[in-house]
Image: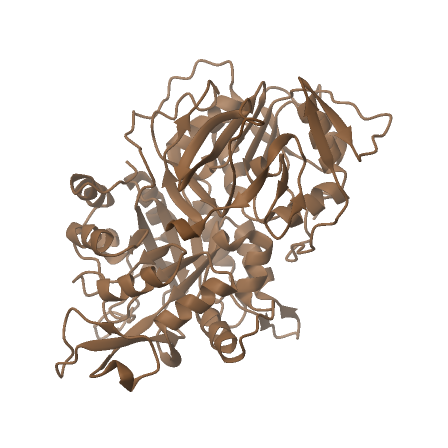
Length: 584
């Protein structure tokens, strides 16, 4: 299969560090002055006569999930022309650059393939351009991410990391509000709605770049959420993951002069919303078909003579319905896949691909993401496995058992080897793409001094009147306990590169009696990354309880949504009444 010149090779994204050569482009008045760049004599920008009004050029450099951007563009009626050479950039009539991943590897690709020079020449001529997320950050002079690393230098300023010391969790993950500062056209239909952000680094407004800034977002500080100058646009948020509101941004860019009648209703967004996530546990049934199931303390088989796998629906159809119902994210957990050959699990890859065609909110996939060797002796790294899932439509990957083993080794040696799945994946894709799923079981003790692990005073006494408990982590779907507590694991995986924690509780799973708020409070207070509360939701009140009693950033449920016992919209309406910010 032909790949573009600047794409990472299949199953092997580049993780090379940024080179030290300077590509600094300084703007002066209404034009740009290029320094330290050699320009060929035949470098020219022209719109391709064969492009037509319904074709957009996509600069996909091969890192992370851009499938959703492709699907959104096609959903809006445009065809896509991929960039295979710098000249393709120069010939584009409209160019979208959906940057995903880390700053340094992206700049390496752009510089080593001549794309940096072509991209700046294109923007200098005020050609229609839309950068997304990293596609905005790369326009600045430099970034502190694994750096300093030199950027394209089109906009004055340095991209820096959020300050977690102020009590804000980093990465900034979720649906937040915009403050529009000037006419931008592509934001005309935002209508005071939330849009989806996922990033650890941001650019700040200043006197030097204020003429570029079209909107800001508040997360500890007011950072740059979008820029606009002439036909050049870029956004820090992900329009392709921001539902109908995000599609309106892409629609405005693709159809700048058209009369657009489909606008989202006016919203009431004012700050970062608490997320409500729908989870789909996916596995093969006894006939080999992939189905959505749900366990009772991780047991997914019916209590019948046939003992069949509990079947609650088809994964693609259910995910699509949850998107319509207002789920802020959809999470797939492949609870039996990848045991022998992760990359051979084609049905799950197909689930992701088909889901991303019509679901424009973030997708997470987990289950078996680890190093492995196949039957032929070929070794695959966890990074290669994760890369295939990103390319198939996942925005984040969830690591379970492998993270437990990595944390145990790290706590034993105190050494970061750089070879663990968490370190490898976060280095290339950024820690915001890495979720660690923790599956603990409550262990009651009479005295905290009886164990070496962090304990918590429990709200409900143990079977023998115990007032304390620690939470033992498990692997292999809860079947094997490990000598590490949830508190110790959470602290370790944050240091190893996790950007978010999915916090389950085996004791509460399928019980419908509420989240384990003792556990959620323990872990959400221990780390500075977002924590997703999971296991035990049975009513709308359980969601407000976990958000008011703990510092959870999101709450996840499965069975009550699958069985239609509690609709997603009912959860959000209840949270609104309780004064909790949600996306509507």
